[in-house]
Each structure stands twice: as C-alpha cells, then as structure tokens.
Length: 453
Image (tube, rainbow, N blue to C red; front, side):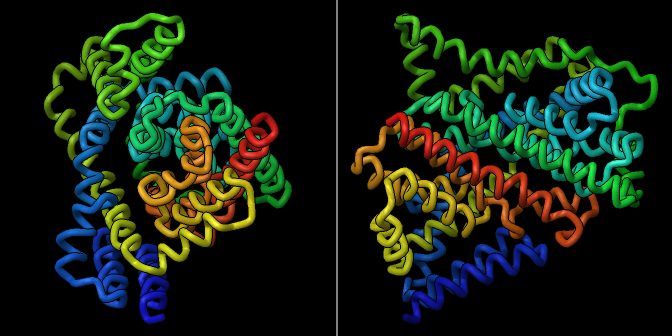
C-alpha cells in the first residue's frame, strides 16, 4: 500500500515540478527518490543501478542513442547556419501567401522534422519568420504555436515511415524491424493528423476573426523578428535548400527499395539491421551536402558543428532522465500490477497496445521515453500474443504520440516559453492537435488493422 501511494506521489511530484518549470533532471531525481524509498528500494540501487544502468536506465539509453541525437542536432544546426531552413520557410511562404500562414507553418515544420532536423531547431527557425506571418495575416499567436506543434510534433514524429526520428528508431531497434515498418498504416495515421489538425486550426482562425481576436504583439516577437532574414537578404532557393533533406531521406529509402527489388548486398542488410547507425549515417550525409552546397557554412564549419553538439546534449539528457525515471518505476510492484491490468483487459490486443503506450507516455510526458519503457516492459507480451512486429512498431509509435503532450510535456513547455505564451492562453489548441487528434488517428489505424487483419 505504501509503495503504491509512493508511486502515485512520485508521479504527481514529477508533473507538478515540470509544470512549475523546474529542470526535468532535478524533477526526475527527486521523484525517483520518493518512489524508490517508498517501495523499499535501496538508495544505492536507485541511483547507481536502476536509474542509470538498468534495461531502461538513463545512461543505457544515452549510450545507445547518443550518435543519433548528435548527428540530428548537427544536421539541424547546419541547416540553420547555412540559411537552408530559412530558405525553405521563405520560399513556401512566397508560394502560398500569408493568408495560408497556418499551412505554411505546418508544412515547413513537417518537411524539416521529417528530414531529420530536431524539433527545437525547427521552433527557433519558424518563430522569427512567423512574426511577419502573424502580423500580415492577423493570426492569434496561440494558433500559430499550435500549427508549429502540429507540423513538428505529430505525424512526422510517429506516423510517417522512413523518418530518422528517435521514436521510429527506438521501435525499430527494439523489435528488429526497419524504419518503414507498418508504412501504409503510418501514412493513414499521418493524413488524419495533418488534415484534421489543419481543419481544426483553420476553423479556430475563422472563429477568432469573427470574435475580433487577432495578432497581439509580445516583447519576444521583436526579439525573435531580429533573427529572421533581413529584407532583401539573398537566401538559397527552395530546391537547393531542400536538397540536404532529400539526401537524408534518399539514404534511408534507397536500401529499402533495393531490398524489395530482390537485390542482396551486405550494405543493404546493415542498413536494415542497424537503424541507429544507418539513420545517423543518413544525417551525416545530409550535413556533408550542406557543406558542399552552402559556402557560408564552410567558413565557420567547426563552430557550427560544436554548436550542434551542444544542441544535442540537453534533449538527450532530458529524454534519458525521463527514461531513467521509468527504469525505477518498472522496479515497483505497483507498475507490474498496472502492466498486468493492462495486459488482462478484456479488449483486443491492438486496443490494449493503444491504451498501454498512451498511458505510459502520458505518465512520463514523453513519447520517446514512454515508447522505450513500453518496448522494454510490455512489447514482449504483445509479440507473444501474436501481434506482428511491424504492426506493433507502428501502432505503438502512433499511440505513444498521444498523451505525451500533456501540460507537463517538456516540448510543450519549451514552445510556450519560446513564444511567451501561457498554458491558459494556448494549451487548449495544442492539446487538440497534439493529443486528441493523434489519439483519434491511432484509433483509426487500430480499427483499420483489425478489419484488414
């Protein structure tokens, strides 16, 4: 009884501290102390065994995925420093016009994140440009924030096949699948998220106009607008700017196409069996193409690479901390009772996957953290129940991208902090496009898989 109460108290403490803006590593360490002590886990095992080095330990995760985080962050920084990311955003804006500002934000964020640019780099790229868009189109800042969240943190993160996102790689590494597993189901879920999400945002924009609500300036807008390309500044063309992303995706896709065509070669087997290394290699090739294509980058290459390495550390540490939190939680009897309850629910296995991955990601406020814990603790039971690894890969990914964006989510807090928004002002719209609609998309995929299976 005391252990169960301690588990609940530790989870509540993590959520409260995260909402108050406390550093996630500090919040996690305090929370696992409460959980561990109340469950009579020796302190030395909490901090020197289960949290850092267990199967779901922080350093175990960080060691396995350091290269991917590093390559992704360096590629993102190179795309920003070369002005390729801005070139894509401005070119799309010129093609679609400011009246389609929400579509612009969503599409550019989706293109960048699908190509491997990390979410935080995408936020910093889109907000400065977005100031101009919001002013011209008179868009409430809360809706622009939701458009960024929709493009950067939903369907390209968990649904679309082939992306080098950490979520896709975690599932592939855990299940022995490749980055295209459950591809058609992912496309279906991605279309639902993108189209229904944009329908919601466009509807809300029209309602805001009818109510007289529009763009309201904020002190952060002026600060970020200074980072946008100056008027008349020469930016790379859309085709040239997008080429590094094409290189990344082609490096991932071509081995898959060759294998499907019956070609056999050691490098193709390596690409399929080593998702972390191959995705990292693809990002490195993307970075190399940036070096070749953009002369300003060559003048300051090592400084940019160093900045990219710095960019990788905070997301890696924060994600690893959340996973280490799960590494302690799964040692408790309360978690095992919870897992048994989930597995014993009188519902189809795919519905159980949807519920369990969602709940674990909601508890940790992290899709990647929740997915890693799900894969290490519950996935074997679902495989034994007869779910195909490829289907489990995609359904678990989609489900993990639902409740991960609750108010204590680090990505949500970072976006609101960047844009000077409060949860009261903006969370409702972010909740709809990053929680409610992704959960709907996952359920549609589950229903389709059950009908076709």
